[in-house]
Amino acid sequence: MLIIENGRPLSLGWLADKMPAIIQAWLPGEDVVQLYINDVFASVARPVRELRGFGRIALEPGESMTVEFKLPVEALGFCDKDMRFAIEPGIFTVMVGRSCRDIVLQGEFEISTELA
Image 1 (cartoon, helix red, strand yellow):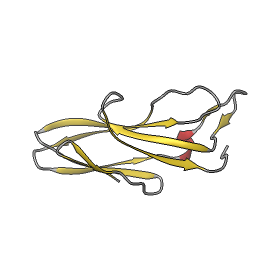
Image 2 (tube, rainbow, N blue to C red; image 1 turned 90 degrees about the horizontal axis):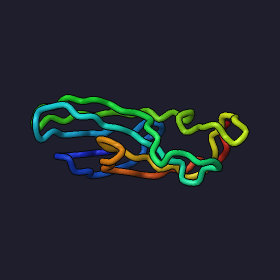
Image 3 (tube, rainbow, N blue to C red; image 1 turned 90 degrees about the vertical axis):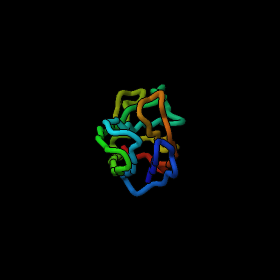
């Protein structure tokens, strides 16, 4: 669970295949929350940040909202050197922020066996 209050990250934990983000507004308006992943030790070159989800929210001052991202295991896959879809075992970094240049929280999880 990602908790952001007044623009400051408070905690990050994992709940199965979803990660809710609780956000409280300072000022009225809209914002975007984005979810990125990184395969730390992939067998082929992969982007440092791959966008895997986003949500647009509108909040009034003092209002809180939960944004939930579902990260299915297929979202971790890529085409390997033989051009076959693969989900390799290894460590993945998950990042959440307003953009790829404004990451406010990150965490890691591990896939222990090859899935595809």
